[in-house]
Length: 449
Image 1 (cartoon, rainbow, N blue to C red):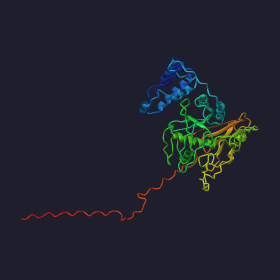
Image 2 (image 1 turned 45 degrees about the horizontal axis):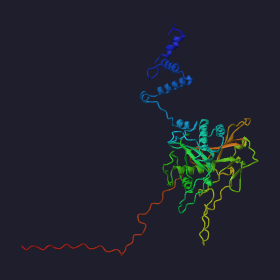
Image 3 (image 1 turned 90 degrees about the horizontal axis):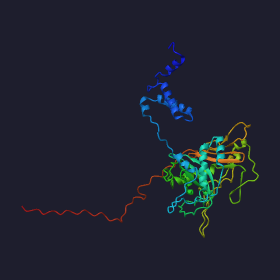
Image 4 (image 1 turned 30 degrees about the vertical axis):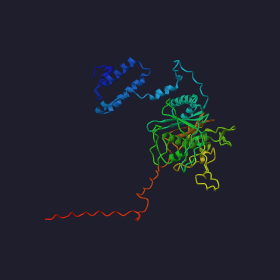
């Protein structure tokens, strides 16, 4: 257009109708500017970028599909609503007689790790959850530890188990007083469970589907649950009360299956720097007084880490159970499971077996530059993907974020043999009464002619 100023040429170019819905860039930009002036948002640049991106996606769609595209007017805010409950003071129950709020019980005293410091260590190595989620985890740990009804002694964030319909945030605790144990009915080939506070039941686990939601205590783990969980590969659904659909059949609900998987994961992946603890005569761990933190380059090796929790044996226990012989009878020879000798306490990772022909652990490091200060290093499990341990100096932490499935080929057990219709040989017997002969029909007398 000769003769027109440059500004008018630019405006005329933007007013060309080039989009599929009959609008121009000038019309769209005018609407966005008017929206910004009317609403006056705090970050107008993000609003402009969002509008351009939505317009670009809509133009890529066909006219029919673009008309059917609907934006979610009411986003899901259940997670945010649940998380808001852990901030601020809890609502006190109202006395129905006086109508006044009842006095709050004194908060429980407990011990907890520095969650935000652990979040910084995990973030440096690219594992675990985001720092925003870890802040919510810290608030849930505080809520769980201060609850006087639960009466916990220690709280630790174990990790997050991903599920098909919902995830599980897992919190590992120790109780000041163990609840009364119910009598256990054992089958012919089953072994008794370990007592609360010892072995595989040394810790009590609480789970919730979203941070701030209702916490559910998982039941104690039984050896039968651990043995059955080793034979299946199964994703959790996110619902604790559902039955586990698997073969061989699992003897319990998803709460029992999740507890068994947590016991297996913890026994294999919860670590500590080598030399940080020493084993005492009672089977517990004591903090070493002369521990020297290893260098960051050494922390990225398997020999610098040790297994913190006891090993789970084939029986599904951390200690072997041997049946006692009856009075006057000789003790039977121990079976293969009863004669199993596990690894020594606090064994280092370089003694672990290979996984799929490779190393069992992969090194982690926040930086490969040796001149960087305050480096963070650790290892990541290849046997249970999602498990990691990181450390910086004397501070270390463990976390698991995964699907709860162990690395390895899926080899389902064959179905049982088909049963015969009759399990005894078909023989002729003379004891049965003989079949009676059919009665003869009487001949009717012939009529005389």
